[in-house]
Image (tube, rainbow, N blue to C red; front, side):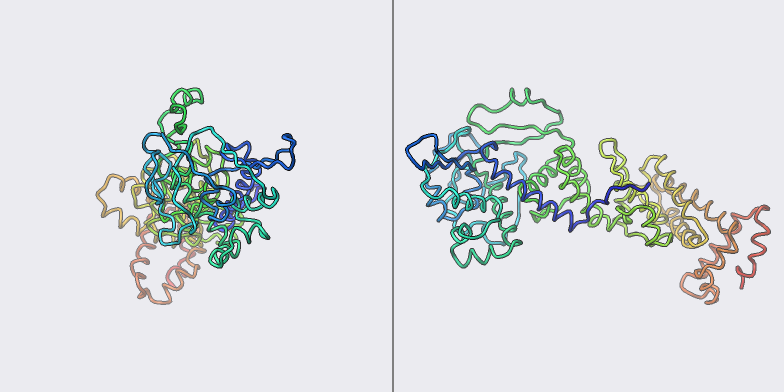
Length: 488
């Protein structure tokens, strides 16, 4: 069914929108820092009137992860108080980043061989400080200039004096030259902030139970310790939480050398839906379709457009590799889940299963699909069984039957039954539409080669057997009239 809504974005556009939303979120964090759990405020009193105090709120973690020593010397010169929190929030004697603050023993390996996000960074402060306190720092400099400099730390945007002040060495200017490099550095700095647990004040754990706020409050840590937030599992898994948090920090799924499998991608999609992160959902969906399923038979195209680009020809609309053959049934099963109901993935998976007819059905993943779904896929093959496609479908069926006859696993019986059911429709098409079928270039080329081409002899035998299986009195005259085309 055609829809008026635009198709989901592909990977380049989804990545661009993710970055755009991430930058917007960071800008909002800067502008609304006072209401977003600030832990530092710079104060300036232009005169003696205390009511004229100007305040600029911020977050220590952002400043420490991003600012060079020149900024810290002017605006951030203080020593954090000793920390009293128990393990794992004890001070580290080393400036090396600690493990991620996620209490799931997840690790990040983003840009191991790249330079440190902040080459001027001094020794690390304690991973966390006394919770709930706001550090107040007197400020004598121009609030406008300082605000511009601070905004650059949050967003990587803003040039002029703030830019020159923050990056006053040739090395830093080279790194920050160009928006792409500035975004890359911002991402690395925020990943560093995540890994090193700078001023972390929350701990995330997974539970098979869904907790309410009151329960979380009752089970939370003692005052001064990081609050523990419990997320339900499912939809969250340790791996999906790792990638979801990384995306929140960096605005991209490509923030680590780690990769994720299809099950983790499913969990990320569910997590994105749970957290109402549409950009994360779209980027993950695009990467599933184009990277993991090689396009998934143009899943984002409506029926009419798909028919136009394939010319209604079976077998040319997508990839038929083994990886796709094993993954597509899982995609369809996921897309049909009550908590997912993804029309795009369902559409692509159904097209793919029809396109994979033959050896693509010779696996346990296809056989494991519910009977109702398998029957609907067979109907899809029947709709594609036209004179144009008859020979290609027949040959695909015969290759599958040969492979399944050699298999001893129980799932092979299920797949064989589905292939044989579809083959009946193919046999009927060859008989019913014999005149049109035997005028197809595929058949003509075999006859013109006297059947001596590679596999031609076997294929001609398959066609003759198909005619025998489909023959009936009803179509005898039709086949008789097509004899010149069959034997010429």
